[in-house]
Amino acid sequence: MLFFSVLDCLSIALGIMILGCFFGVPALAFLNALFGVLRKRVFMTKLARQLARLGLLIIIAVAVLSSGALLGCIYLAPDAGIWLEHRSFWEAALYVCLAALFFFAIYCFTWNKLSSFQPVHIVLGATGVVGAKIFLGLILWSMWRELETVSPVHPAPDSIFWPVMVQIYLLSLAAGSCLGMIYLIYRRRLDDFGRDYYRFALKCTAKWGIFFTAVSPLTCIWAFLVSRDFFDPTYLILPGIGYAALLVILILALLRISRSTQPMRHKLAVFLCPFLVWLVFTVRLVSYLEMGDMAVEEEVVSTFIRGWQEQISSLL
Image (cartoon, rainbow, N blue to C red; front, side, top):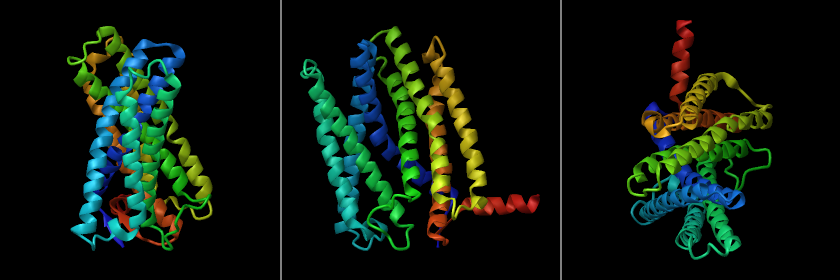
């Protein structure tokens, strides 16, 4: 049985959050571009282009790191265990990653040239975003399969993996909005679009973060419905409380930014948001691991939360 300490969960959650931004930032860029075209809002189009630039940088970085990690495992560490347990899935994820990079790069570099052919530009962006989404889903399923006793090729329709994956998608969009706000502050002096634009851009990005953060708990209901036959809340209470508390704090911080007339003055809240999202991913990771044990009805992994909960129980 594997044991995950606090440091292990923090490290893995950070990696998942970065992978989430691979999908979240390009998806936010595409959504803003689409709404900018439909509503004819120039500021939304500018925001979309800035976020698309950030999304492309993240996609390039993840593609390089993923290629290096897979090639390193194949040629330098053939006994790497988890990384080669389901090698075909990791390779498929890498191919999808490169495809997402190809289409989203064209989407970014043809922004002006295809301004008169919006349908073509939208299709390119949608293809890149869908590729990023499939890449994240393949990575998540490859990780989840390590918790399965039989290790099926694909999740069953009633698998608890589906609500877990959807919640990670939603949290990835929230993480992308938080990272996007920091990028906007960084680009303010480099892209002088005016005070009114950056006031709008920060508030708009914060509102996206509020929306996706607020709807993410709905997937918990879905997870309960598909796992009600074997649901055991014993080790889900503490991470559940932490998840709820962190969501409230994160939404309050984002509300402070979105409702301010001068959002640039709330830099502390802006830089606090990614840290809060990281903690949200951490507590959810603990819950996912415990739910994975419930799904296979055996203890495949053990997390630090069990020791914490036992200590609290002994004190009470």
